[in-house]
Amino acid sequence: MDEEFAVDLDELHQAVDLMSRDFSNTEGLYLPIELPRFGIGSTAALNSLAPSILGRAARLGEATSFAHMDPPTPWITWAITLWNASLNQNLLHPATAPVARQMEQRVVAWLAPFFGMNGGHMTPGSSLANLTALWSARECAGVTQVIASDGAHLSIAKAAHILGLKYLSVPIDANGSLDAAQLPTDLSKSTLVLTAGATSTGAIDPFVLARRAAWTHVDAAWAGPLRLSKYAHLLAGIESADSVAVSAHKWLFQPKESALVLFKDTEKAHAAVSFGGAYLATPNVGVLGSHGASATALLATLLAWGREGVAQRIEHCMDLARCLRDFVATDERLELYAEPQTGIVVWRPKDENLFDQVLRQLPVGSTSTTSIAGGKWFRNVAANPNADIDLLIGTIQGVLQCS
Ligand SMILES: *Cc1c(COP(=O)(O)O)cnc(C)c1O
Figure 1 (cartoon, rainbow, N blue to C red):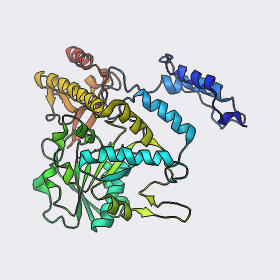
Figure 2: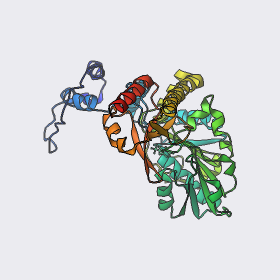
Figure 3: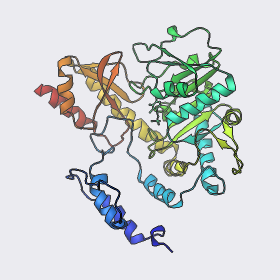
Figure 4: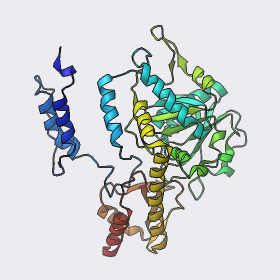
């Protein structure tokens, strides 16, 4: 028996204990330049890496973290991820992942109805979910063109490029949503991509446009999980889509890589993107070959929290964004890009000379920047239920006072 492949609870416990140690003063990253000939052993390797990996990472759950779409993850997902790594199931083969495949089907079955879809599968992110959906659209609806707004995620243009489809980008309106007046009238050879929660602005495209094109795909990578909350109505009409992408590693608080591609007619959509190699007991559906059991972490989280537990956390995030919005809207030194729709607040100082100065003084990880129609803006994303919004507002006020 090679001990490196066996459970050593003492050493695993030590590795877990390292997670609660304070490595915040760690500087530099000391790694061998060349692949070492002899190893130092697993415990020594963990001890030598912990200060950098644990000490120098961005802390997505800390009070000032409010900049990006990356959420902190609940501890139940850490436990499941450990199980997953030890089992190394491959969902490509029913034989190596009998239970994990069932769990993926169940978690998809739980979530798809919130979007009016009847099934789908998991992917490692919405970039791949978008690619998969646009691939199905090309096969099922014979489209030759993809149309999305200027505010759409870059993965849409990338997918069109990979699939050899023309890509047409339509201007956004003053709120960041696709400007319906600018759409071509003939969409009979097109996939129309509508975004639910644009990456820069959080804007939602008009879902009344769904069904006008040969295929409608909704990229709900960011805002999709609102469907489980009291804000479900913000995405009303999403059920008219032919396919939907949702990232679970954003607003469902999952570790990367975790997302879903969902279809209205899953049987047809899956059949269009399936290949059966001789050694496969079931056809390989979609873009991925071997892939892991990220579904088990998502299922465990949903089992632990229930829909209400998910809703409560997302609604809390929406409240945090609302507080920041109210502060920006009432401070005359500041300007709001537009009313936040899905927990993303875009703003800036009215005096553009202050932009860089303010940015430099805000805590790292509290605020990101984005460029919209050539203008520079600050962007805050409510992905962290543990954010202390009064602290962030106080910091912004302090910085403005001194500027
Ligand atoms: C984040 C995002 C994506 C890409 O998703 P990944 O999970 O990062 O691959 C696609 N579309 C939108 C609107 C996003 O915000």
